[in-house]
Image (cartoon, rainbow over all chains, first blue to last red):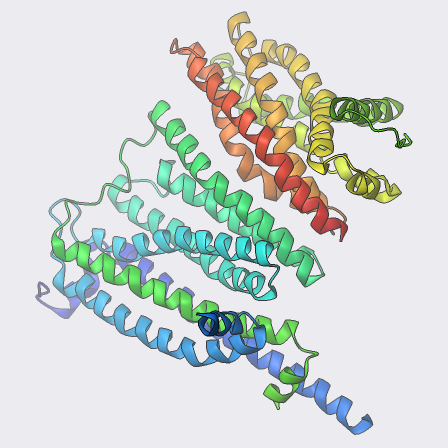
Amino acid sequence: MQWNSVSEFFAMGGYALYVWGSFGLTAAVMVIEMVLIRNQRTELLRDLRNELRSESPSS
Amino acid sequence: MKIRAIHWFKYSSPQNFYFLAGRLWPWFAVLAAVLMAVGLWISFFVAPTDAQQGQGYRIIFVHVPASQMSMFIYMVMAAWAGLGLAFNTRLSGMMASALAPTGALFAFLSLITGALWGKPMWGAWWVWDARLTSELILLFLYLGFLALQSSIDDPRRADKACAVLALVGVVNVPIIYFSVKWWNTLHQGASVSLTSAPSMASTMLTGMLVMVVAFWMYSIAAALARVRCIILERERHTEWVKHAVE
Amino acid sequence: MMAFTFKPLGLASVMLAVLRREVSLAMRQKGEVLTPLVFFVVIASLFPLGIGPESALLLRMAPGVLWVSALLAAMLSLQRLFATDYADGSLEQMALSPTPLGLLVAAKALSHFLLSGLPLVLMAPVLGLQFGLDSQALKILMISLLLGTPTLSLIGSIGAALTLGVRGAGVLLSLLILPLYIPVLIFGAGAVEADAAGLGASGHLSLLAALLVLSLFFAPLATTAALRISLE
């Protein structure tokens, strides 16, 4: 453990923008990707269920 | 022997793979999360401060995994593509399509984190060194794949065309990499290479390795989750899908 | 349109027949052959306009600029490589003929080189003079283009086959094959620069030749696969 204080940790020896920018962007991309996949699935299921509902009364 | 062969090909049907992927992907997601936590711990609390680069070098703990995975995913994509062309299976093309967005995102991340690393270290947001330039070209290859896929309406034709493109691409990647290296050394461009990591303490190597595996598990989870959506979309008119969505 | 007779023809004469057909079709639409050439001149002229007329700078940039311009001009006519034949049904005839489709595809790619690439090779020295290249550099430029443009046609045929009949095929084709063109560009422009720097162009030119041989063997394969997929 080499951080003497929390603020030192966040400052990252002056490289805060670059280090936290990189890690933050990576985290953001991963989260967004997961959200997008989940949204894709929800929409798809909704569409398919609507299709089924509109088919079944007539069948 | 024959029974084992049957079991294997059972999962080449989209229907069976859909449910297998459904059971598997949460495990890969958990694995990814755990490994990511461990990797982050090592990145920030175990790996020491670098003598030359200070705290700034820690970016390699996301930059290197992103670039490694972007290249690895492209090869896996091409492998699925080859399988799909050889055996004419529907699922192979779906897997290739499921992998492409993740790979493209990692290529993009690799470029941005490379820039964020380069700026404080070597003073420029972008240097035309061999690795970054090859990564840029890899991103172009991914974008071409995604563009071709979205412009062909028939999904089977799109899969096969993208498969040919992926195979042509994967054959070209070594040629492109070699030519870019040649180009770079000949022009004596950025003489500092972003790949020359600081003299690596073993903890740094461990951290990188853990993060690479974490990214790998994440990619598998994302691909499996995405392929489930693709399967539902493509197979929407089959009976099993109708039962599955009720 | 040329009729394919049922007399068993030798492979070489079939390929020659394809070549002759392509050339005679192109000659009827001379504009289509000249447009890439004009495009080459226009793009090459844009660079000085954008960068400034300082001769030392232009001389330095000339190999790269001329190569990029030639590359883009060669790419311009690729879309029509298969599209017109696809539209009138002769492409399906070629796919069904007893001659291996790979050979026909190779012949078409080579005809594309003759109609697009070769004029660029011949035009390049004129533009090179505008950039201040000396005769030795012009010679190397021409050789590099001569070796490189057939490769561009062969690789381009893959893209043309993949995007056959697709929406927005022109731009998509460019996006797909430009990354694949990069090695040719690097060695082509690099040859001229290396020669100017006194290092000799033989390394670059041999690599260009190697790329040509590789694409001569493998591009028709990929193009054939792509055509069969597009024709389904």
